[in-house]
Length: 345
Picture 1 (cartoon, rainbow, N blue to C red):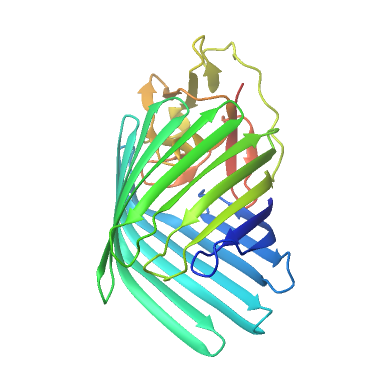
Picture 2 (picture 1 turned 60 degrees about the vertical axis):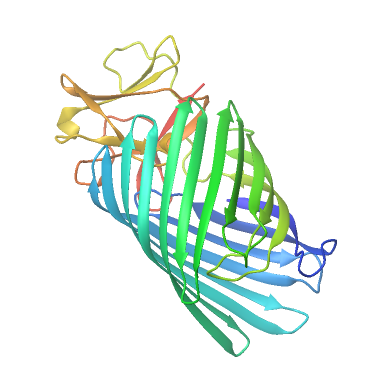
């Protein structure tokens, strides 16, 4: 659940004139039943724009092995707004269908995708639909605990021209503090303004987090939106059943979750609960599967994690999400499924 306040200004209109708004909504990250969000915003000025947005999607897996996964990312985004000055309603819908192949090795994941993006925009009685082909590659690296580096490239093919893009990003987690930054640019003369931004979040408790971010948005060939600069402050609260942290270290060598003297976490599940080779995935892996290895009658994985609270689950060799009964600290994910909570002190 999010409550936020922010401000945006459009250089094409007037760099020193912008609009402030209050926003509230709820979101859910990728999990067994996919991701979704629902947000609404109200202007601080009566001449501003009120809006609402919603979206849902899922990563559909054909193959979900530990080092190779294949499938398709599908999603739908909806937007509606009210222009109080012009007394006009508007809105839009974006549909994405992107088949992908993801290859993982060590602390790296290479994600390749290619598919279609379609956007329909309506303002008053005017409607416009645009469809483009999207090809992209993203490489994620985890060079050390609590650090993630990302490089991505996109190639959009539209009816009038092609639009290549390159970008980089980084995220670091140190205790309750998360900081991130990104920068990218469309390599096309019609889009001279780059995109970049940075933010920081502080986890106050295992439920509450406050974040602040600043961003320069570029035009996008799918929407042809105006470039804008924005900042926001957001207060978030995690919903669902409150987990009770287990003490660390756990003395039993056969316990499901233990921590060694160097701080590495070991998670074990019995082979009786997973006949084929399982993978673990969660907040700590960007919800990318990490292979487990067999040790006697157990499947085992070792993780080096920064202090924090992580949600996670398991995926079998067929790509299906499951939660072994032996895993502790299971909570309702508010979508009819179950995830587990790992607390690293």
